[in-house]
Amino acid sequence: MRALFHVHTCYSFDSMLSPARVVRFALKKGINILAVTDHDTINGSLAARELSAGEDLEVIIGAEYSTEKGDIIGLFLCEEIIPGKSSDVIAGIKKQGGLVVLPHPARLKTIDEALMGAVDLVECHNSRVDKAGNEFALSLAVRYGKPCLAGADAHLGSELANAEVVFEEQRSDLRELLLHGQRTMRVRETKGFYNKIRKLITIIKS
Image 1 (spheres, one colour):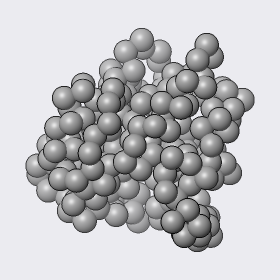
Image 2: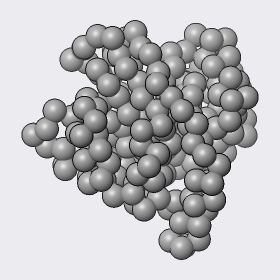
Image 3: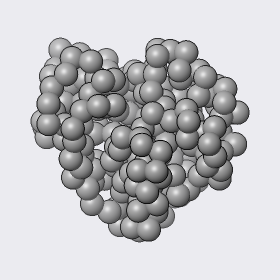
């Protein structure tokens, strides 16, 4: 099974990528699992799920929430969570039966035992993070025994192909697949000028 994680759409303050374009890309490329994780809202993933109805594509409802420790991704959500205190965000994810993903750990403000104890998965490769940052993420996952994901952290259509997770088996329970399925990651680094474009989009949308 092929999966695309950590995608931002126009529901994020720093992206103009439409959910429709993301879904079209996933269907064209044979992606089976898609996780849209917009900043502080599940609305982008809800839109993607609606657009993919009847297709061979499982859209995981998720979001990337702002906290005092840094961003935290929740997957398999049913309802919105208010960004803020990390412990509250994590509790909100867990209450819904969701999984807690630690994105781009090298960018976090704080990494402590409480946070790592609550994390289910670590984004060991983020295409917008440099080699040293991704090596740090991988070492963190190994140290705490957490399974890895690769995230495109896509804000533009041309970034969607920058990270893919391939699971070697099929499971009806996607939570179990993410936590325990054997996987390989196909990744490449996003060019630096994309971050400049992201900042420009933020200014335009503000």
